[in-house]
Image 1 (cartoon, rainbow, N blue to C red):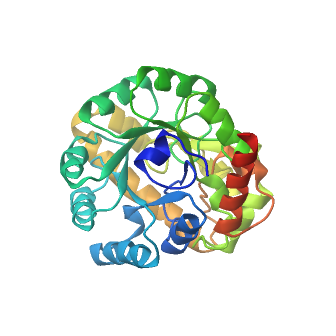
Image 2 (image 1 turned 90 degrees about the vertical axis):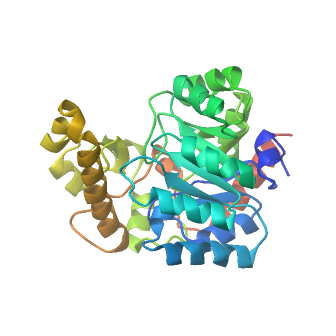
Length: 321
């Protein structure tokens, strides 16, 4: 066991969150992670209907009493946000991770229910804002995170936030080994959020092609694109990604020029992009868009979630001696 400020607010054996991954996270992965002594979260958007979303929460709860969380996209690109928040509150999930928007409404509804709210942040200005709103912790998304990455290196972001904030700082980006967690803790983090290495797991519900790509490609093959969700997204530079390019489309350029249309265009880009990612995640297609981060460099085989998590935990314990 390794105890930190993160394990104080989320009572698990190790200060590790298996990050919520769009289209990848599922109940089998969450249950395996919880069994290994870490915590885990999944995106509400991974479920098409509220009934399926509620069933997923119930399924995990029936398996274990260990704490788990739900990730909510809290801006206007997610038309299901309000209903998803209502479900989380009614089901009293242990914690919510908010992304891509203001967590104010989420915090207001969750605090009275004892539900922790942890907010993705990429800079100090926003971190201070969510702390003032009442967030329980922040996830410091650095420049080598998978998915929607930040702009600042781990070595700068975590110390800056940990010195300025009174709430725990969780580091996200670039974690593959126990020594990476130790590095983040030494810099002031209370724990880490880990995503990419868990995509190459037996339990992940994505295609075998996607999992094998995690083994076959390297850090040099990761690029950032703004074509999928309206925000910079890290993906594997497959032949299809190379063919469509990674720069802003005419639609995105219009979004930035026309403020009144911005929220509608952003929603359209998000829905169109997530559909493309979904098609690539679950079936073989020439239109391949696979989300991953630079820690793909350290994936050499497809393993179980338990193997990945337990190895990370044992390495962390060893490095803390």
